[in-house]
Amino acid sequence: MVRQKRGSPTLEKALRRVAGMRWISPTLDFGKGLNLTEYDNLIQSLQTELSNYNNLLTSLDEMAGRISQIEEKLSSYSEKMLMSVATNYGRDSVQYTQAGGKLRKSSSRRSKKSSDSSSESTVVTALNGANNNGNQSSVVLP
Image (cartoon, rainbow, N blue to C red; front, side):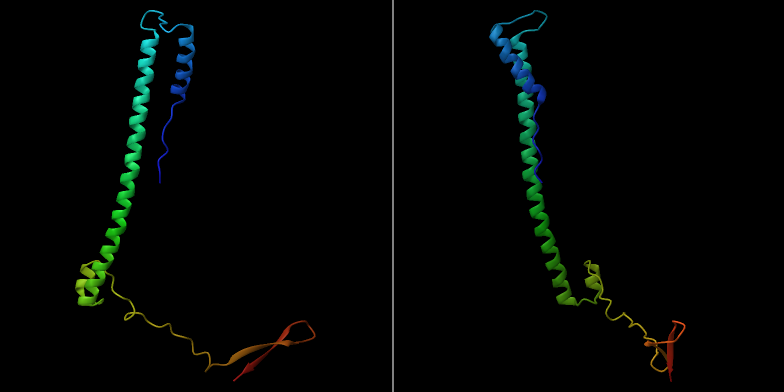
């Protein structure tokens, strides 16, 4: 995910103002440190810091991309290592679990017991056999 670079509305406003003030006088100075030279210095300082900040964000984006690539490679490698342990020692071995594998549950699974309803009497509801009261009739099979 690319981080959004930062701009500065304050900087944009200052750039417009300093351009207008230069039209008034290129050497505008109000005393007490309020002059175009100092104004330009502050503008330049903010531009430099914003540029550095945005360059760092670009570097971070590149680093994050490299980290993601290495993570994918490491994940694949980890899987291959685990499969190699399984191949050499078996999936049901202590070594496989020590390497981070999980034992298969196929040998410990129990099949669900089905009820023996075939040996018991079954009640069948006849859909077409409604009696005069509107109730459905039932047939019991031995």
